[in-house]
Length: 202
Image (cartoon, rainbow, N blue to C red; front, side, top):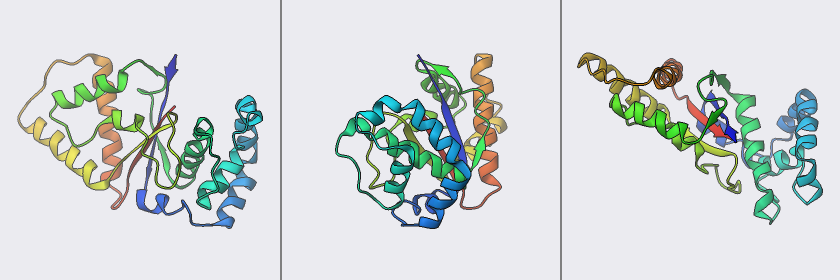
């Protein structure tokens, strides 16, 4: 079974502030612009919704209004996807070619490649954790993680220091490509003060 990592360039603080904001205008914008996407997601999770999971819009409404959330944790995944939708609405999607799809422990393999280059300030494996902002219920999928602006700048400093020292360990070409994609994400952050990266594994 394969997974996918979706990554967004955005202002993490501003995006987290949408949770519990009660912004009904935002909800209306989503409904108007992305009604077809919401319906498509409902078709995909039809059996789960029939079993009690919220629809895509119901989950989004709950996240924006900080509840109410269904008690069954097996249905909490919809709230994670609702937060991902908010990130997609407010952020810019970053190239995930090296991470979609991926199998097995690929994120850990890429992290080892970063560490080999002495880049330790960020970890792609973190995107597989349950780092959703409170009070959004956590769930196994989607995984969610966040890199702050400061973390990204530190990772770039580590990369530049590695280049200055001429430290170039042998890495598999696929790992090199993935690491360079990560560096591109960091460059985008560097150009946007206050911005960071939020990623989702599903």
